[in-house]
Length: 206
Image (cartoon, rainbow, N blue to C red; front, side, top):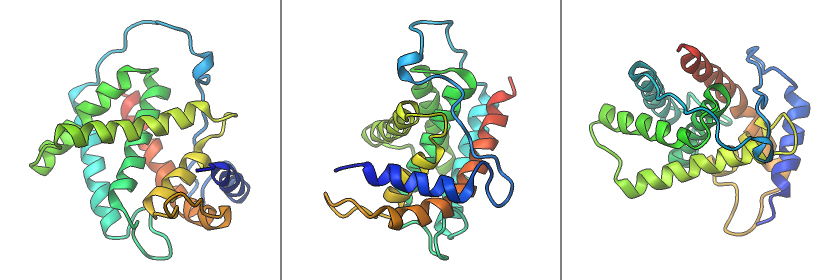
């Protein structure tokens, strides 16, 4: 599928919102270099503290419930069509925040695995390994999109992906029109930006 509609939708959202959402939340920007700019190697990344893992897992659990109630990522008063895809966006934001805050690189995937395992404990049912791997892979797709975006402002692009998936806007191989995606992404922007801010505060407490 041609992804040009995502770039066009993201550009529209960026023009509508600028650097801050209606609630005053700052729209995150990429601080680290893109994939090609990252040096190989580097010092080992410390594991997350148990309280950080628990805090993020609790927030994901709370947010999933709020999504189901139409209180988060809602569009025109309706909750996301596919809650699992909306949760994928949140997981992607966790992985991106790990990368930006802790320079986690490949270690971030294992750190996210810890969070999701803790989330499974909270819900009383661990994710089957195959589902967990698929979930981590989707989060990795968001991180890759963040890193490969041509510019320092990939957040609207990330939300365009999330909106398309959470509201099932793409029908089979047919790309939706940018004007269909942009309003949904814009509606989700404040919730996503505030969550990203929460994550950076949690991860910064080391």
